[in-house]
Amino acid sequence: MHMDGLPENNNVAIAGKIVEECVFSHEVYGEGFYTFKIASERLSDQADILPITVSERLIDKNQLKNGICVDVLGQLRSYNNYNSKKNRLVLTVFAREIRILAEDEKKNENQIFLNGFICKEPIYRKTPFGREISDILVAVNRAYNKSDYIPCIAWGRNARYMVNLKVGANIKVWGRVQSRTYQKKMGDAIEERVAYEVSVSKIEIPHSDEKAEVVENTTEE
Image (cartoon, rainbow, N blue to C red; front, side, top):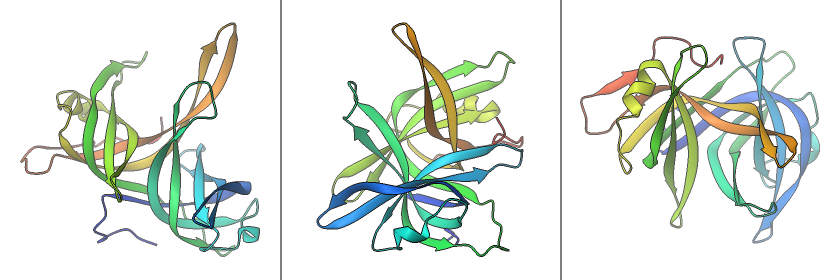
């Protein structure tokens, strides 16, 4: 599956091995949706553990077993989780096409393209090792007056470029979907959580001659 040429503002093409079998998620107008998780390998020995949401009309959920490799084409979507005490933004790869890979067919595909608007002032910081990072939140329009809010992280010269962008600016982003574990203090307890974000490899501001693109590998952090 390839997303080249698709006139969409939110495209994800990803492949990986199922590491958490699908469970029922929700139902919309009689159509059931299920979620499962895949491990998408990086070039290093690490892997991103990412959630996938799929309609019962696309594939028989009984085929989605641990150890099966799948190829997914879809969108990175966000929704609000009201089950916890605080409203939390949850991300998932919403499958529009899905294919089970043959045993001898190995793919490490993980790429995303977004065309949206900066909806929060970029945050610039440095790691303890001195690497430059910018965090931005991109709003991507969806049908029926909805929007997906996608956290993105840029490195190096992209980070320096992004920090000068204003809220409301239109931006195009290319990169990969990644997972990141972190710890959050909840009173006296420490809770481990997982964040999902887009690791940016290239950005472009439409209707501008300025572009920024990293030349170093940013996906192995």
